[in-house]
Image 1: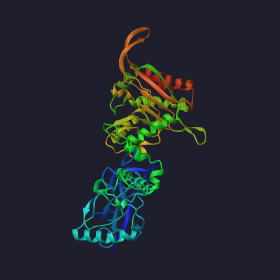
Image 2: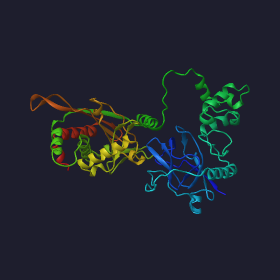
Image 3: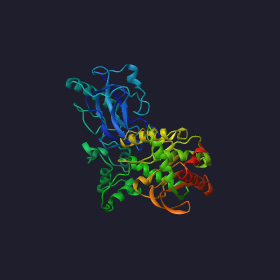
Image 4: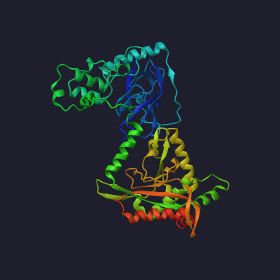
Length: 450
């Protein structure tokens, strides 16, 4: 008889506690191999594929595409053992492969395959799975699809722990509700509707400050509603936390970038990979941070200490269809302009394709923000928490400029530095920004630091 194993959404790492189902890669009745990706999810940091540590027949899936699940919530159930066409070793069936997510150490060499078992085999496996699953009585029910044979894997069609808690706190029997979600899924709105219409509301519902029903009863504001979750929600939370915790200040200066652009043109005139303006600015930043290490630091609030960081992990803002991302170039202080150009290009391509790993988006110590690509001159950027500073670069355009005592048309750029006033005072911030501007105006200044 096949053994039914429940695979739950694993710990995603990087402090992530939930993920949204983007695309199922298997269906009920499919045969999966050990470590085969079964679902693609979107976290607050990246899109990742989740591999299943068991091999066997998929007997149930939990959640529709677009559903947000917390870590530890059921994803699928798999019937393993006799009666399936893909049987793991006993030790593997008991403990799984140990792999977590594609991008977190999972073996990429195994190709993802999707096979469907013969109808008779699938029905047999599903029927056996039903008996085992009823004995195991998982806490959540599969709501997205039903297997070939009826399988009751839970008492009610609800997967959200928030909905369960709301019902429990207010004495609502979920079995008596008819869900309005996909495949009868019980949503929070269904519980709130039951609370509003119940003739004999429980004491808990009357006495407790039922904030959720009160909000739901107010007239809804008209307009398009966009859920503040996933990447957008993560960005909103990080920026809000930055403004709450960091006493930031901004200083700026205009710089004549004519010589910098001429130097770049000369570099790209010879054979070899092309060097971007962003790479030259990044190299200038790493040299400036070596002179002013206060700005490559973070504040440890628990210890009440400023931590100066030994390496420059340089974040750079990249606009994608999914929103603003900040990929990180590791150990930027050891890279040449050519190496920085190549790494910027690689990470930008991955960001736009939605293939960045969470590790590519974390661990930054200083951010370079080139908002000039949007056709603007200046900005007061919000610091990328928990970093201490961000350099903003506007567009480089011809402007009237006094050069060598005469009015001339030069290529001018506005540079702005937003910094954490806890880690340094204005003198340090001004010194950093002035050094960056001097290198932009006369790249030969940078040679003294190389």
